[in-house]
Image: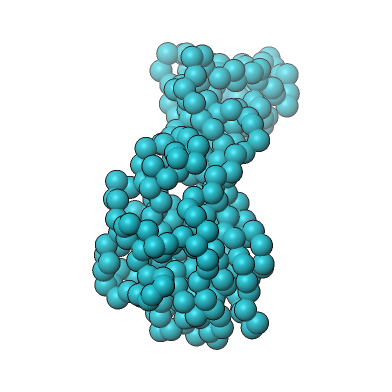
Length: 293
């Protein structure tokens, strides 16, 4: 007998994304820019390697109208690319939500999440946009740290891109370590630091965040109908079940199987909105989706 059991879909969610055009929020005043050899700058190559952290307060972000949601892009305004400026090797961006209100001079805030890179990057004059590989959920109340690191200690040094900065600020808004010999700058945890005037701790790059909103929902998102590549299959014959993706950000999927519709077991590695599998006797399939933030 050729049969197929259609899956039962369950959505476990407290939040849903709104599909809208992303909003942009620029944080900090335009107080000039770093020089070709000074810091802080988020796009660097004067020293061969660098690790830096920049602190943006929740009050600054909400003051610009930014609300809880997913940060999908980070943009730096490059006002100048000095002659001879080369590629920044293994350019890496990380983000961290924090309660810290002023960065330590000789300490680092740990636990930042990778959101872009590592990839080689060559700056251009104008807006330099980084579309995040891993959109980052900001809860609307935490302060935010952008961590930049990368470089190659065996490559040539050139110049820093000149990026709009804000300062002096009333708190330690940046921490920079720049070195020609460091082989693993992103892993650096030492106490060395860069300081200069102007520049240094109370300056930081002016940033623009692109975001997509996330809000509380009164009803569960509509998953929609399940489709199958075959209406009927024999035992052990491959087929694919799928739904339309509910949202690109924050949704996680898990497929389950059950012999009786009561006891369910997660299928290892089945974490996409589609499942290629084969039919077993008296075997039910279920998809659970959860929006994690």
